[in-house]
Image 1 (cartoon, rainbow, N blue to C red):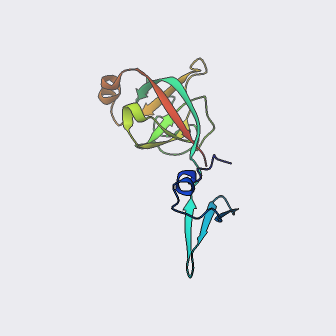
Image 2 (cartoon, rainbow, N blue to C red; image 1 turned 90 degrees about the horizontal axis):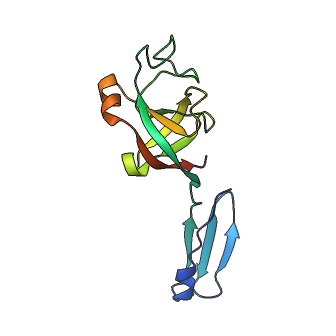
Image 3 (tube, one colour; image 1 turned 180 degrees about the horizontal axis):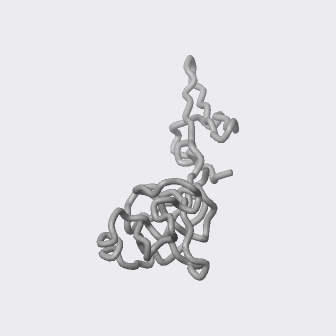
Length: 146
């Protein structure tokens, strides 16, 4: 389960009375602040970052020299498309961000790399030219919780 952020600053600053209580429900923390005639409810979502690690980021395309004999089918059995990454570091269907290179875009692990690639993430691109232009970069990936 993720790390929860509690609005401690709100309690300290007096926005909520000190008699407010926190109740844990199915994945959310609810903070109830009682006033004279109303009840206010603030839902705090769990932190979605499961892990961060620095890896080599490269790119590949669906060309025979870069893939196996089924260049448009991923190792997980899906069709290649924008947002797919190949890596041996994470299970299939893991969601990942690469903020330094792609901002808030979310990628999904659906393909694998050669077994010698142990600290790499390979981003699928539509053309070989785009993949070559991307090159290689060292960047932090953010693994998101399910």
